[in-house]
Image 1 (cartoon, helix red, strand yellow):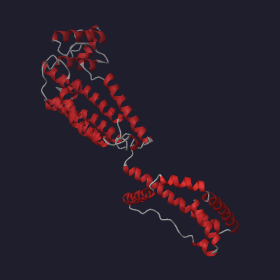
Image 2: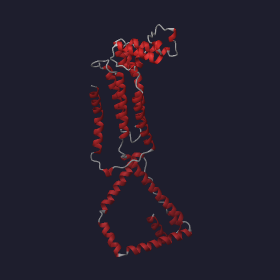
Image 3: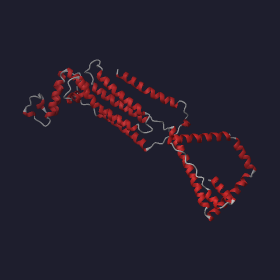
Image 4: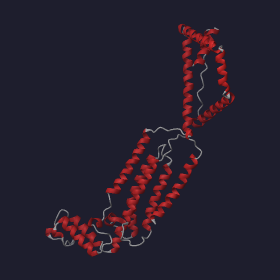
Length: 378
């Protein structure tokens, strides 16, 4: 019954998530994927999940809930005579022969020991569990709830006490998953991890409220729920750890990176133009600058006048639809500018065209040619 409930819950919670992944990746080609490098925060998140999984595994294996039946090495359905015999053998083996007929309400002088209070609590628990109704409550809610809840009188009281203690486990797992899924790679799990954890909590409450079938003394419901909780928490953390956003960047991040590169190019071009202006204002540097670009112009004119070069150049250009490429380039630039405005509410920095300082001092056409050549080379 529990397995059916568990399968149905995971199907209802996981089907929309899996469908969303399928639709998102249905028509996506491998070459369209852009790798997202793992950051330090991503590595810390993965490490936290691994530590959480290891903690749950260790708790599942080594920290079993206390049980008098496991202590006495008898089944929970054992008759009272077998229960009595193993109880006496346990007291004698652990505390000595003088406790063979220990009565917690009538202590003999030779039974005084530092462990007397512990022995007395154990004996009281043994006497109470001879009653099958008490034994059923003990198996359903666990030893801690049965022995430590001083105000519990009904099943509702024991349930409230048990759930209040279990809630600490859910607070811890929700805090861990909330911190981990705050990263970009794991944020697809932010909603679904909460859905899965809440589903586990609802299943736990449902199991407590549903009457048990068959022999209720055969198994401990409290231990079964605890083991299931550990297993489901391990499964949820493993899913979050294994699956993320497929190392893919969002469209906003891609656009922002392209905008950042475009802004850097504009700023670099402005810096080059300022460098040219500062060069042309000094006589010696201006002469070297002009001579250099005159030489470059001569070399280019020789190359461009070569028939072989022009033939090859025309053949290469003929392979491309230049008009379409220019149109697509303009459209791409416009899209990037629009995206930049939407993301930042700012305008792209404009080029600084105040290059008049170099031309105002000297109207020599030679200088203008050199300046134009320098800009083109940059």
